[in-house]
Image: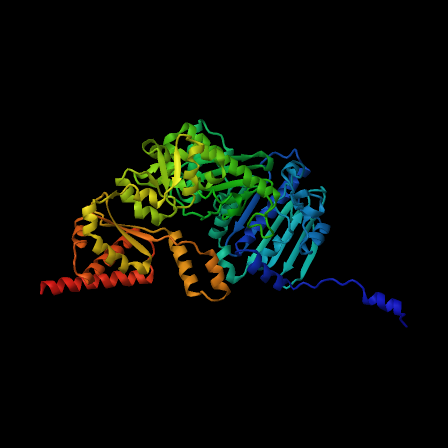
Length: 627
């Protein structure tokens, strides 16, 4: 009979998780890996790690003497390496235990997250893989995995065969050494019928080049046709080669960037961060990139392609380049298809940003033609950087293009002809006043675009003699000449009717003279003024209750819009002489509508209705008059 204590002990006994391998493979295929094609990357990665361990076991082995061989003939896919191999105990430990990594058990530091820049040299992990589940990816394309391995750690080690099946079962047996005369591992897959897209010989070769073109160990491919085979990585990375001249090196790097990204770079920037073993290039895009769009970067880890869309490699403002890099000590995520966000990656991002700033500074100092092409194409990116980087601000602000009343010009050019630079707060405000301000000799900069207003206001930090101020409507109207008293009196009746017609828009009407004479009217109405009038209107409509009290407390004297009629314009001179009240009101509405359209700001429904009504009324009047 069992005692209560023993029963409790038995009830609390440890159990082992039961793993549904098919369910796990389905989870990997749908949520971890982006595509079944990663099976070949995982096999190549295991082979690279095995070679790394073999060189660690035998440092005297000549570089390049050990390699990887791929074979695909349509019926099988085979990956063979000359690496460290596995013993029977290793096979039971590492191939039959899901999630265990040989790197972790052997004490390698590759599994340990790198916590800071200064500790990188102390944690030089030489292995790519970290998570010990890569071999399972082969079940994405095959129902059985056959592994034949022989360990290099023991000279007379037997060969070991492991067969794993998709239902979770496996067999292990030892074979004579003659079954595999040399140390290393061979993995053979018999693809399923539905996996032909990823296991055809041409596709296997293409995937091997895609993932392994920068691997440091030789990788050969054989398609089973009896030909000489092909090298997957015949040359080292372009930045690792030697060139006869700096110009030849620059051209080679640009050609590689064009091959990888499909565009001819405006320039290439070499990247070298020894602390993390990172080398590569940044290719400056030859075309403008919309603000905020971040391009992915091509990142290799120890030669193996990790990601083609690693947006996290650079800060957001650096959207004018695309990078291809190879790093020793960046940490991949579990899927090994993106970078793990940690202190090391943050430090790398900051260091690469410094390299880009240094390139801009060097270009500004040594190559004004390239700088001009760069700024013409990527001024928005540089403006974004200049807002937060005082060094770039001092260096490039005078050369950045802005929209002004003299056309697109640099602040340096514009400040030479205008002692005071007036800045608008919005694009629509600039469009309202640009023609009149230009004719009046005022220097106005469009501050409505992202970063522009803030940057123009910082010009005196670099050019102390420059004066920058926000555009005030009173500044502009002060440059419009008043009409003589006799003309003002003659137009008084018309102006009164016009003010009454436009009172619904809180718009005053005045008569002035200004250039160009072709402009019949100028509408001065800022976005802030419209918002204030809307708030005031809401307060009037909700006088009762708490909301009305709050709005009433916030209410200020709402600024009115101004429709300024140009006495120099023939149409205006004809309009102010109209003595029919209805026609005078209609003409004032039409002039307001035309000025509102020219401002290119969004029209309110009432304004759209006014424009349609005034046009039809004027057309009806003209037709009635002709009849």
